[in-house]
Length: 50
Picture: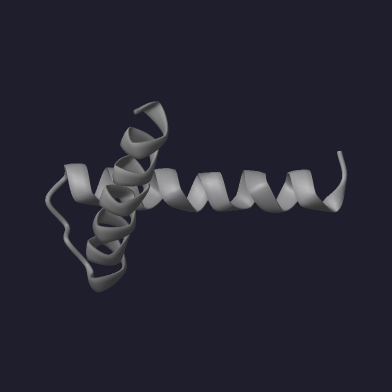
């Protein structure tokens, strides 16, 4: 596993932790930011799908 793969793994772990916080109703500032970014990414994906 190279450095990029480790970094991606670390980011995914952090994302999953924050997502669980949101699901549990713990809307910390970072979790709120995650929700906003998630919506932006979903919108981009929807545009790509047409």
